[in-house]
Length: 204
Image 1 (spheres, rainbow, N blue to C red):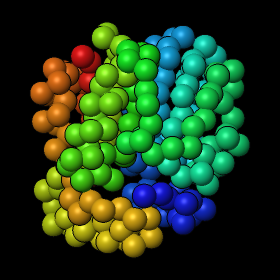
Image 2: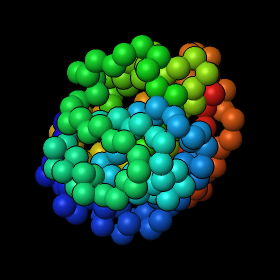
Image 3: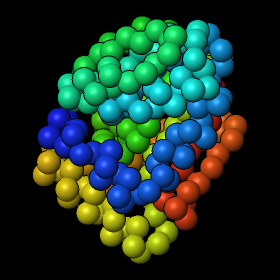
């Protein structure tokens, strides 16, 4: 699974379909990143989030940026990250080893919708163990849509990215159950597009 085939037009496609809703959901979370934090971003795509972070936290962050797409990482490396330290890693997070309790903040922007439930469970546990005991998890993703047009859009997305990017999932995994079972509490949450997109700050 990789977004290499769609990297050059992914952001434009997302803006066409969602406007600024995906960006707004992630920007809502960025202000919760503490100063001088060790940050893990998984599935950051083309890296626009690095510039958004730099506008609010221009120095002091040590960011590890992991994405499975080499072309996405190449785009991310061109972004203005101000004075923050960035370590770029091109890898499938399911196959990546992470040190225990090595991050203060984990950010997963529209990551888990790519996974079947078994892979989602595996990746969630890996990221959970990498997060410091008092750390925060900034989660942004789709949730089960209430509106018919959003259900159709979700099916179309899975069909398109299944063909172009090898996404095997055909429905959204239960991430809420994983957070609850692992002892996380939602500190603040915002929902957009009638609840189709959700952004949550989780504290363990």
